[in-house]
Length: 161
Image (tube, rainbow, N blue to C red; front, side, top):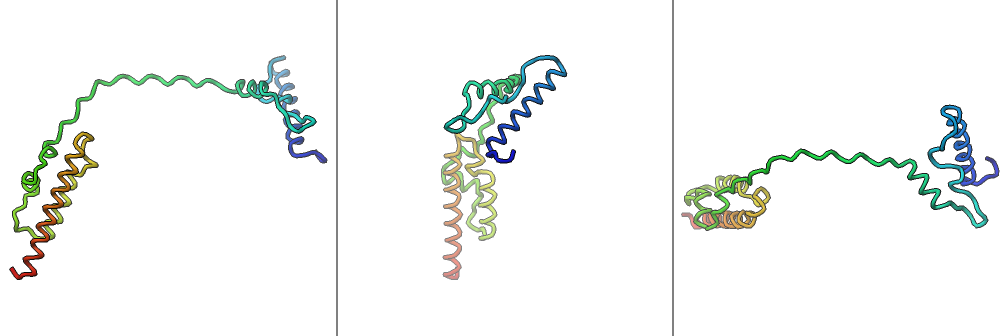
C-alpha cells in the first residue's frame, strides 16, 4: 500500500475483498457468481480512472431488490359530508351583532372576551374550505362592531357621560 495513491489502494482492497468473496463462495456452495462490486468494476487507465458503465449498472442491479408492492388499503364506505355550520351562513351585520349578543352596555373587558369567543367559533382557519369567505366576512364584521363599540365607550368616557 505504500507508494500507492488513495484510489489505487482502494482498488487493491476491493480486489482483495473480491478474491476473498470468491474463495468463500467456492468453499460454501461451489462455483457461483459473486454478488457485489467485482475487481473489474473500476481501474486506472493511461488517462486516469475508468469504469465500464455496463459493469457499474450490472453491479448495482445485481444488489437491487424490487420492493414488494404495497398492500391495497381496504375501501372504506364513502364519508358523509360534514354538516354545514349554520352560523357561518349568517353574514349580515345584524346577524353577527345578534350572534355577539351586543346590547350596548358591555364593558371593554367583556367585549374583548366576546371577540375571543367569537373568533374561536368563527375563525376562517377552522371553517370548511367552501365557507372560508363567509367566516372571513363574519370576522371582519364582528371586529368592526366590537371596535366601534369600544370607540363609543371611550368617547362617552371622555365626555363624562
